[in-house]
Image 1 (cartoon, rainbow, N blue to C red):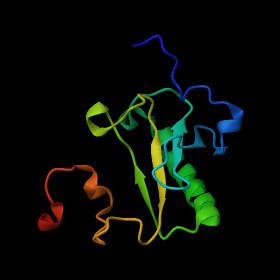
Image 2 (cartoon, helix red, strand yellow):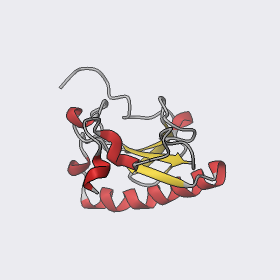
Image 3 (cartoon, rainbow, N blue to C red):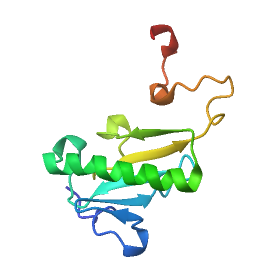
Image 4 (cartoon, rainbow, N blue to C red):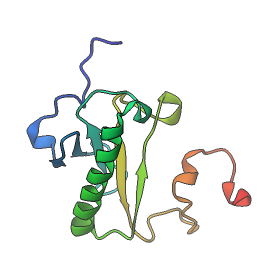
Length: 130
Protein backbone atom coordinates (compact mmCIF):
# COMPACT_ATOMS: atom_id res chain seq x y z
CA UNK A 1 0.00 0.00 0.00
CA UNK A 2 1.20 3.49 -0.78
CA UNK A 3 1.48 6.41 1.61
CA UNK A 4 -0.48 8.59 -0.82
CA UNK A 5 -3.91 9.50 0.51
CA UNK A 6 -6.88 8.10 -1.38
CA UNK A 7 -8.56 10.81 -3.45
CA UNK A 8 -12.01 9.31 -2.72
CA UNK A 9 -11.64 9.01 1.05
CA UNK A 10 -12.81 12.01 3.08
CA UNK A 11 -14.49 13.96 0.28
CA UNK A 12 -14.72 17.72 0.44
CA UNK A 13 -18.32 18.71 1.25
CA UNK A 14 -18.45 20.86 -1.89
CA UNK A 15 -17.71 17.77 -4.02
CA UNK A 16 -20.63 15.72 -2.64
CA UNK A 17 -23.69 16.01 -4.85
CA UNK A 18 -25.84 13.75 -2.64
CA UNK A 19 -25.32 10.80 -0.32
CA UNK A 20 -26.90 8.05 1.71
CA UNK A 21 -25.51 6.35 4.82
CA UNK A 22 -22.84 4.37 2.96
CA UNK A 23 -22.29 6.10 -0.40
CA UNK A 24 -21.78 9.54 -1.84
CA UNK A 25 -22.03 10.89 -5.38
CA UNK A 26 -19.68 13.31 -7.07
CA UNK A 27 -19.10 14.55 -10.59
CA UNK A 28 -16.42 12.66 -12.49
CA UNK A 29 -13.38 14.92 -12.92
CA UNK A 30 -12.75 13.42 -16.38
CA UNK A 31 -16.30 12.95 -17.70
CA UNK A 32 -17.05 11.04 -20.89
CA UNK A 33 -20.46 12.77 -21.09
CA UNK A 34 -22.18 15.71 -19.45
CA UNK A 35 -23.45 14.58 -16.06
CA UNK A 36 -21.03 11.63 -15.71
CA UNK A 37 -21.36 10.82 -12.02
CA UNK A 38 -19.32 8.62 -9.67
CA UNK A 39 -20.90 6.74 -6.78
CA UNK A 40 -18.33 6.04 -4.06
CA UNK A 41 -18.60 4.15 -0.78
CA UNK A 42 -17.48 6.12 2.26
CA UNK A 43 -15.61 3.05 3.50
CA UNK A 44 -12.34 2.47 1.68
CA UNK A 45 -12.56 -0.79 -0.24
CA UNK A 46 -10.66 -1.41 -3.46
CA UNK A 47 -13.15 -3.63 -5.24
CA UNK A 48 -16.87 -3.93 -5.77
CA UNK A 49 -16.44 -7.52 -4.60
CA UNK A 50 -15.15 -6.29 -1.23
CA UNK A 51 -18.37 -4.40 -0.45
CA UNK A 52 -20.51 -5.63 2.42
CA UNK A 53 -24.04 -6.86 1.73
CA UNK A 54 -25.39 -3.61 3.24
CA UNK A 55 -23.12 -1.50 1.02
CA UNK A 56 -24.26 -3.44 -2.04
CA UNK A 57 -27.92 -2.96 -1.08
CA UNK A 58 -27.43 0.78 -0.50
CA UNK A 59 -25.72 1.08 -3.88
CA UNK A 60 -29.06 0.49 -5.61
CA UNK A 61 -30.63 3.29 -3.58
CA UNK A 62 -28.00 5.80 -4.66
CA UNK A 63 -28.07 4.57 -8.27
CA UNK A 64 -31.76 5.48 -8.31
CA UNK A 65 -30.97 8.90 -6.82
CA UNK A 66 -28.39 9.44 -9.56
CA UNK A 67 -30.84 8.39 -12.26
CA UNK A 68 -33.49 10.79 -10.95
CA UNK A 69 -31.05 13.70 -10.69
CA UNK A 70 -29.54 13.07 -14.13
CA UNK A 71 -32.99 12.63 -15.63
CA UNK A 72 -34.08 16.04 -14.36
CA UNK A 73 -30.90 17.83 -15.41
CA UNK A 74 -29.97 16.14 -18.70
CA UNK A 75 -33.07 14.22 -19.91
CA UNK A 76 -30.96 11.36 -21.28
CA UNK A 77 -32.30 8.65 -23.56
CA UNK A 78 -30.41 5.96 -21.66
CA UNK A 79 -27.66 5.26 -19.14
CA UNK A 80 -24.49 3.24 -18.77
CA UNK A 81 -23.74 2.00 -15.26
CA UNK A 82 -20.32 0.45 -14.90
CA UNK A 83 -17.64 -0.66 -12.49
CA UNK A 84 -13.99 -1.21 -13.36
CA UNK A 85 -12.49 -3.82 -11.04
CA UNK A 86 -8.71 -4.05 -11.09
CA UNK A 87 -6.09 -2.30 -13.20
CA UNK A 88 -6.56 -4.76 -16.08
CA UNK A 89 -10.20 -3.60 -16.30
CA UNK A 90 -9.25 0.07 -16.27
CA UNK A 91 -9.62 0.89 -12.57
CA UNK A 92 -7.33 3.89 -12.00
CA UNK A 93 -8.25 4.66 -8.38
CA UNK A 94 -8.12 1.64 -6.10
CA UNK A 95 -11.21 2.72 -4.13
CA UNK A 96 -14.41 1.15 -5.41
CA UNK A 97 -16.51 3.52 -7.51
CA UNK A 98 -19.44 3.13 -9.88
CA UNK A 99 -19.86 5.21 -13.03
CA UNK A 100 -23.32 6.44 -14.00
CA UNK A 101 -23.19 7.96 -17.48
CA UNK A 102 -26.21 9.59 -19.11
CA UNK A 103 -26.50 8.75 -22.82
CA UNK A 104 -28.33 10.48 -25.66
CA UNK A 105 -29.41 9.19 -29.05
CA UNK A 106 -26.66 9.93 -31.55
CA UNK A 107 -23.75 10.08 -29.09
CA UNK A 108 -22.37 6.70 -30.18
CA UNK A 109 -20.12 5.72 -33.05
CA UNK A 110 -20.35 7.49 -36.41
CA UNK A 111 -21.65 4.34 -38.13
CA UNK A 112 -24.65 4.39 -35.80
CA UNK A 113 -23.91 1.14 -33.96
CA UNK A 114 -23.74 1.88 -30.28
CA UNK A 115 -22.83 -1.45 -28.69
CA UNK A 116 -22.98 0.04 -25.20
CA UNK A 117 -20.50 -1.47 -22.80
CA UNK A 118 -19.62 -4.30 -25.19
CA UNK A 119 -17.17 -1.93 -26.89
CA UNK A 120 -14.83 -1.65 -23.91
CA UNK A 121 -12.58 -4.38 -25.33
CA UNK A 122 -11.06 -3.00 -28.54
CA UNK A 123 -10.01 -6.28 -30.19
CA UNK A 124 -12.58 -7.74 -32.53
CA UNK A 125 -16.05 -6.82 -33.59
CA UNK A 126 -18.41 -8.50 -31.15
CA UNK A 127 -21.52 -7.89 -33.25
CA UNK A 128 -20.70 -11.16 -35.03
CA UNK A 129 -21.13 -13.03 -31.76
CA UNK A 130 -24.46 -11.60 -30.63
